[in-house]
Length: 235
Ligand SMILES: NC(=O)c1ccc[n+]([C@@H]2O[C@H](COP(=O)([O-])OP(=O)(O)OC[C@H]3O[C@@H](n4cnc5c(N)ncnc54)[C@H](OP(=O)(O)O)[C@@H]3O)[C@@H](O)[C@H]2O)c1
Image (tube, rainbow, N blue to C red; front, side, top):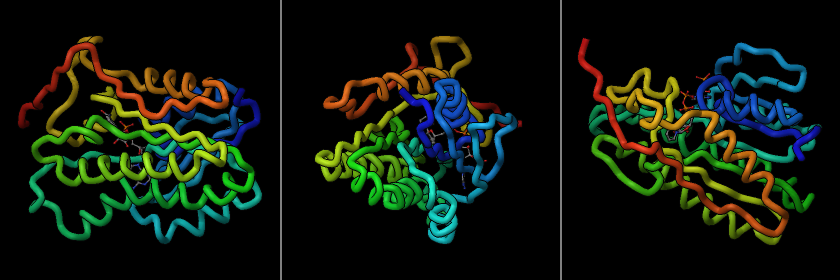
C-alpha cells in the first residue's frame, strides 16, 4: 500500500513523529522528515531536512527546492510544541514563533503540496491536532488558538479538496507519553492505562491509510483509558 510512496513527516525527530516515521518505513514508504534535529537512526529510505518551522516563511523556498523533483504522495503534519502559561508571559516574538510552528507551518506546507496533489488528483493530508483542538484549559490560550485554528483549517481544506480525490484526516490525541512534557509542569500518569503511546497513533494512521478509496476517516479522537494529569513537583 505504501511501497515507494514519498511521504513528508514534520517533527520526525521525536515522539509521535518519530514513531510515525519508523512505522511508515516499516511499511516500505520513503519518508522525508522535517525537524531541527536529525533522528538517531539510519534507513536508506529516510531523508532528513533540518528546518526550523517557527521560521516557516523563510524555510518555505528551501523546502520547495528540496522536493521540487520528487513526487510527494502524502503529508503527516505533526511538528509542534507545548507551552502552557498566562498570556502575559509570552513576548510578541514568542507568540509569533509559536503560532508559526503550531499553526502556520501546517497551513504553509499544505499550500506547498496542494497544487501537485490537485493536478495529480491524488494525495493524503493527515494532521496531528489535540484534545486542545476542541476543548480549552487554563494557561493554554495560544496552544488552543493554534489547535482550534488547525481544526478549522483542516475541515475547510477537506471540503476544498474532496473533488480532487485528496484524503484529509485530523487525529486528536489526549496525553501521549513523549518528550513533549519535558519542559512542562504537567505530564500524563505513569500507569499503562493513563497515557497514550506514540505507536497507538502510528497504528491509527496505518488504519486511516488502509481505508478504501471513496471513504475518508475525517477525524479521530484518542484518549487514555483513565484521565490522569500529574503535576510535577518544583525542584
Ligand atoms: N504528547 C502529547 O501529549 C500530545 C497530545 C496531543 C497532541 N500532541 C501534538 O503532537 C505533535 C507532536 O508532539 P510530540 O508529543 O511528539 O512532541 P515531541 O516528542 O516534543 O516532538 C515534537 C517534534 O516537533 C519538532 N519541532 C518542535 N519545534 C520545531 C521547530 N521549531 N521546527 C521544526 N520542528 C520542530 C521536534 O523536532 P526538533 O526539536 O528536532 O525540531 C519534534 O520532532 C505536536 O503537534 C503536539 O501538539 C501531543
